Image (tube, rainbow, N blue to C red; front, side, top):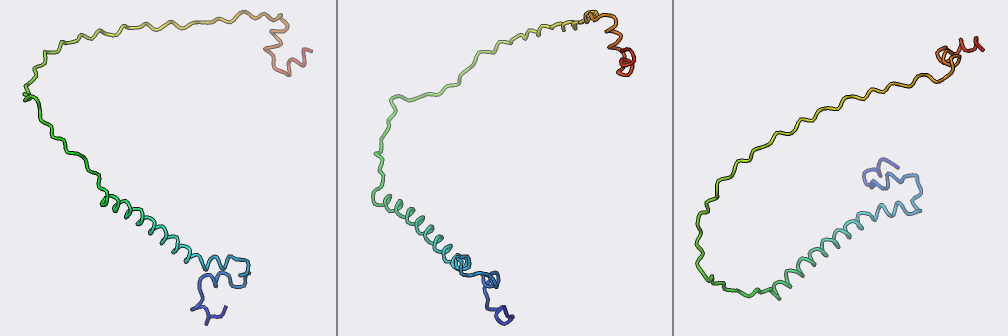
Length: 131
């Protein structure tokens, strides 16, 4: 693109210079602003229509509640209520629970034969010597 055309070129033309403009992405990018403006106009108009319809319906058909006059039967006199003194509750101390003694487990005596007991205590190199 020449530098003389650079001032009048759009951002899309700069991006798609030397690329295939025929497959549709170039046209979609050019029409995007129109589509966005149209979607915004439709959304605003539908919102205004919805709000105006509800206001017009309220103005044409107001909801009138019948007024009800309530006359009290008796005169209500309020008096101070004196509560009886509260009884003091005595808190019983929580019982002290003794901790159980730990259980000592003694392992059973070695039940292997003597040659096997000594063999278990030896390292692998000493075992090879005994065999």
